[in-house]
Image 1 (cartoon, rainbow, N blue to C red):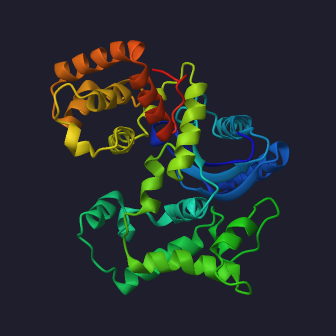
Image 2: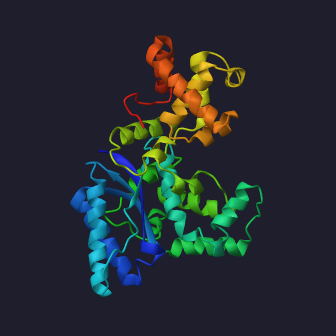
Image 3: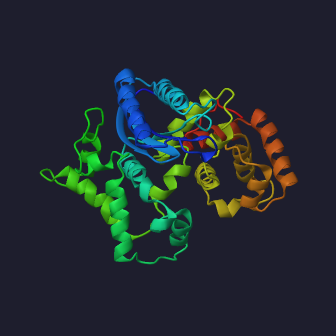
Length: 345
């Protein structure tokens, strides 16, 4: 989409290294600069690790796929020739996650990208440690560990963080100004100093399972309205997409409960257990045919067995064809959810 922001990740095949020495990193960064010029990409952040890389980019011309295909192909050909190897270097296609350009979403995504070099077990920021914090098992990091984290963050050469923090000169092809502006709290403040404090204070506080640590598992990063808009565009042009069901599942069942309750004008709990209630059955139908949920999943939400869920879905479908008022309630429910009635499973 023209003007869209994207969090891009690409991993080596089988999680194997895609950089074996400093020159490999240097050449990849040279290609990043070439991609920016060739495809008019605005590159906001980047970080390269041994077996994968992250980018936060903006595409004024809506040509992310072409740009990424050129980048990955160019590097793969160079890498294979250098090391006398053949075959794929990267694992499948790159992963592209749309990012909401409103609010703080892009800024938080940039922080996530830059923190990747320190999100490892040896620094107390691995998956297990972050999961422990989510469960309430938090331990204040020791001073020596904090210092080690900050040293790794500052000294990781293959990242845009040193430029953002003012430790090195910003290259001409890297755009820092927009995120500097968003992270700056005062008109005359030093944006490099403020960005540096944002990230390094985070490391001093310890592990935190918040928006930052959940971004990598997302299909889209942003507000509810932004997610609904992206989801609608994706499904409208889904074609043979293998991840279509994942995109449909972005809408949680709790949002569906609220939407149907709003249409009916009564709380969900008042009618969900009512036998034959059209509101409950309508929610089942939408969850099944619009949200990509399985019979078992739907049954788990409302306490029904698979067969009963299937029967209720089939029954309400027939009623929708004949009952104008029910059809209107269905259409209103889809509108509340930001759904497109012409997009179907």
